[in-house]
Length: 310
Image (cartoon, rainbow, N blue to C red; front, side, top):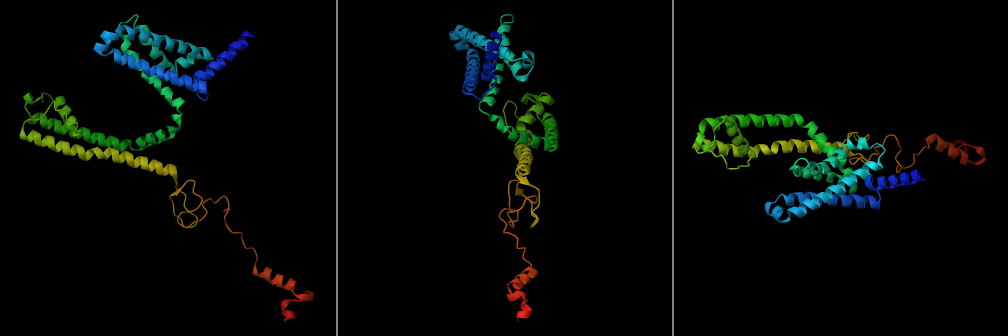
């Protein structure tokens, strides 16, 4: 009887903690995410010097309270499972450990509390609560678009690196060390900042030729920014068309590009599914001229043919 009650408790706890299709399960996940966000916020607030000086002791107590809560939650998770060690080696199991280990390690290693920001990774559980996994298909489509355009993007990055190297070498030869161009890596850093149109301003050319090169690189940066965007956008549009449109040709007019759920051709109105008949097609007229003649013969009096009657 005790084992049956324990099994029922484990099953109930498993439904609340690991599933999200019931109201208690959703409430548990939302409460857990809220606690995670609050605990991360406490860590950030504790890093502010004047807040730490004023509320440091309170932050310390609150952090230990969160750690005890998350430790208890992890113990309950492991209690619900038949193979708890397998869960600890999983993605979410590792995140659960990372959420509580820094505080416990701080007892042995001072300063380990800074690793508590890893807790924010556990907010990934929100995908289970909000059912956002239905967008995995769209995410997969973007990944496929990146994979198909990887060669073009690689060629683009190679070209950018060549431009950075060439202009970095030129500016290193032109500008004096007093302007900040003390080495080739330093000059390449300036080339990256200039080509990407970020322009930190910590290094700037002082000679007229160097300023001309800098202006040319800024304009060049604006012109090449659209290249990877266009390549990726083209692949995304291609993926959308492949997913939405079919390549099958219309049996009536031969046109392609119909939507996958289309029943009739948008050009000629022909039924597209060749395996099933058109439900809206008019019934076929099977009456032949011979049948009509025989019908006339049947209508003739006394069994005589039409010609004999005439």
